[in-house]
Length: 223
Image (cartoon, one colour):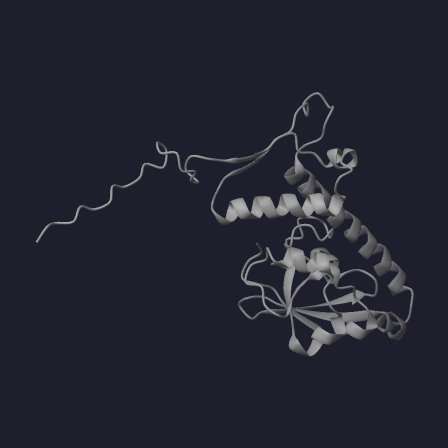
């Protein structure tokens, strides 16, 4: 019987087939300020396309490099990743200040009145631990989670529905009350981790009296 020869092992650095070992996705001169100069697409479309491209590269373990110029000279600001991190910090500071102001206002009211404008939100993590927070009407579930340091909610885009890192599972009893997803939210959920029929982006769920008792579960990880 003739012996079959094993296929030679490819050298990912020497052959011409693109692999994560011999290629990289580089977004050159990519700055949020450039959006205003583009008239062929909306800001939302550009953001979705860039996010989709980067997540596709990440799915295949291809390194992604965001590049810009003249940052040291002060002409341009840092790349999107830096801007997102800065935006998230600003959001946390703003929410903390807003929360402390509202807390002082609530303290001047009676306990019954304060409770009338608050809703309890239950956050369950992957281990089954439940954290319950009181949230006033108005902010989103994501904002409430960031303000109260709920683990499992990254919110990298600060609530712009442009990153999909505030993904949660809404308890079946609450799916109808939180409302339907928008087309933009559905697009971002396509890049989420372990997306299910009850998946939602918490930045798109606004807290109201009707959501008092809302139960959401965070996924094992964010995308």
